[in-house]
Image (cartoon, rainbow, N blue to C red; front, side, top):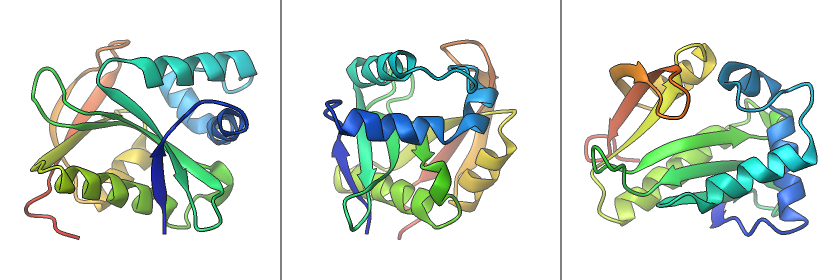
Length: 168
């Protein structure tokens, strides 16, 4: 079972989250947010702190049954344009890919939103990240738009999942 808790960004957790980030060089090549060849402690820590402190956002740490950090997620509680909650980032420790952790984290997020009375959730997938597109489609998300992301203008697929018609 996966548990999600708000990240405190103190040692040793921040170092564990940094390890998750550095174990996903392909994601950083797609996004361009960090240099996968030179992911300094300072750069990763600054990015995580910035994400965690953004208005209406939460940075969550995902742990397995043994309390090992196996991933992280960032959520936007209410998008200012559409009013839906958004999953803005989901990363799984690269050493544990293809073991169901991503699905478990996504399901935990969806359960949280359902329990809060949300009817749908959205996310953006960079158009060049084909693996992520396949993952989210398999999770029941449907593309509803293609537009530049707010941060850097990168082509991004907006995906939507109706939580009422996709029960667990």
